[in-house]
Length: 411
Image (cartoon, rainbow, N blue to C red; front, side, top):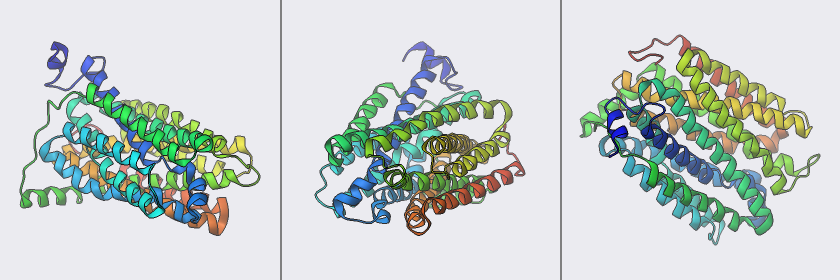
């Protein structure tokens, strides 16, 4: 092991060291792969609806089933990682999900495609279940929030890559090649993570046995701060996915009349989410998570409301603000969960899994509701759904400001 890595291991890798750069780069790539594979069908929902003769709400099942499978599998993956370790699960998750994603491109029927998309979610669970717990364990405490922001920034770029690539490729060569292209992104990222990610140095296995697991689970769902953070994840994710699930249908119709490739270009706002998550992570390290989280909520709800006019430049501005606000909220909240869990004696992997379970449950449920909102009330109905969820997120963020802190700073 290089001396620099060994020297930083006892207290966690410090910013500027080789170990820190390897960890951040690897988890950035892992986050990119996760969201590219997870949301690969979102930009081509109109194409899938036409090809398989299903409704708008029916087409969103290719996303909702994936996020549902991921959310449920997280409840297993998190506790397993607390006992067996982090890195092996990360590698297995990225490899398996890339293989299943490639199989989606060959699906002979709608039912098969839905089953494979459900399996993509299940196999993806190993990465998000342990990523923030791994960061908390392996990096120096002074960099936890900014590193979590960088990881979430990777997921933002993955969301853009998955949607942008599929939109462009689907218009040129069809939906099967589009899904194959995102599977190739997953394979490339899996290889990068295998090469870059250092093995865990500070992982301490949790106690095993039914009684120990029950005790850990009880603590994970009895802390007021953690429960509030879980709610924030579910509401915020539901708002973002609701907007982007319905967006393709809005842009395909009057007055925009955009094709898949042109509509896919709107996902170029996602790098702003990367910048936002990194910026808010640094602000959280400096000013505290409680101070910056409500600002992200305010930014997101403003963005959702700005998308109401039927003018494409205005819609793009609104989407940019919504994306920036969402990733600010998610970046801060997801890094806060393992920090508070550790300070409260809760297994960090389990707490992170519960946060992501509610995150993806919100994504699945409210993402599907967006199709019904679109059918019933058009774009104003979708915005009303998203704004309501973001208002709930802001309320929960304000509740956190009054929640007592634990031992670690800002938790």
